[in-house]
Length: 380
Image 1 (cartoon, helix red, strand yellow):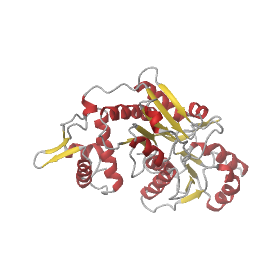
Image 2: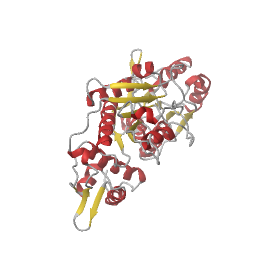
Image 3: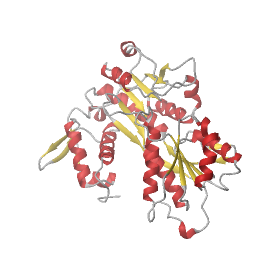
Image 4: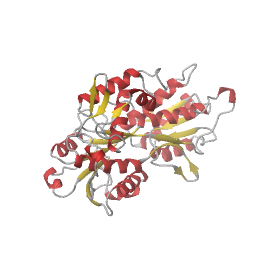
């Protein structure tokens, strides 16, 4: 990457996330100088994007821009990074998942391990989760009294909790609130976000590098009313990967539908027969068992006939088959959430922070190269 990258809103946001994260991790003390050229190389951004990001951070009060002197971390804002942070001993966890589901799912277990590592031992957790069902719709967050929480815990972590109104209410009441994998433009709360667009991109590029050109994305179609933008971002990454392929751009193929995979037995067989894909990108690893089952009904096996790559690490194995998948470090997300709460306790005036967690692609047994090495892209 470099100056050839477009000066997009996403690139500017990435730079802002990078600078904020360095302040939260105490890598940048108040009054310290930021070098534009070092920042450009660290983020792979254009000069223009760096300038715009720093100007926006200065408008938020996080940085100070001094003519002919440079850019500096504002006084007071980074106090949490230059003095001992408060110890976080108690938090509330808000979720549309039941407490049992929170303890069972791989990514939530990683989040809790990260929070425990970064906080006091033991960390006291108050749960506000469904009790009558295992999971509710991701935006059906239970109503919680903010004043009651202020007397009970030091901060709030939202997991699978996409209700901006209720999270904002708690943050504006003076509670440090961190949402994991949820953010809105008008957020008053902090957030830790896995790079879901990059997850879709990585999965698609992996399959392209193996020689595949008829690659289908299975997940929620573009839906501006979706309560969970992560699947939308994964599809965007898939489309970006298809466009990246070079030469003749493969045709994007999307089998869209609700997050519930029950309709796959009806929709997938005719779709596969019509398009004859050699590979699938799944918006979630949770779709994999049903996709594999339905494909077997039409005598299509993985990886003999088709390859699979998943956009997350919600499921990494089905029976004896290890999936290719893009992994977010949710242990790091949990640690960062606690650091954000501690930083917010030390410096209430800090603007809302969004920290992005990178993705790592893990090749597995569910994807294989097509014959004909001359058609294969180099693995990047």
